[in-house]
Amino acid sequence: MFRIAGIAFAITLSATIARAEDLEPLKAQYYELSGACRIGELNGQAISQAESEKACADLDPIGKKLQAAGQCWDSSEQVWDKCPVTN
Image (cartoon, rainbow, N blue to C red; front, side, top):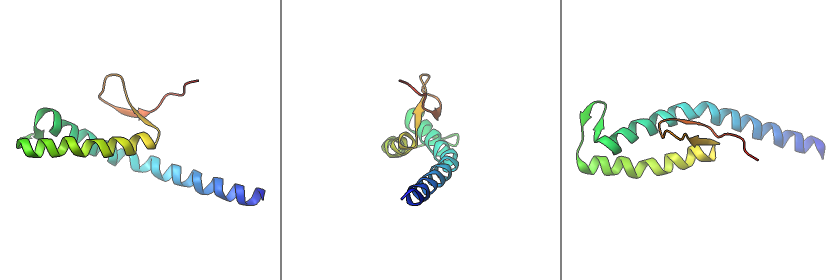
């Protein structure tokens, strides 16, 4: 029984580690879309209103993935980072 629990824990731990490594590209995507959403520019180029609206719509699912991975949008609303531990 303990062997099964240990294996399950190891699989969960390795999945968490893999997920943590995948967060940086996801954060970069969020930051890029955030700029497109807020200021209507992507890679320094002006984009259409429709493209800006699509960028805004795409932010929510990415934000949910980051939150599910234990990330929080900081109080300055500029950086995703590991959520603080609270009681």
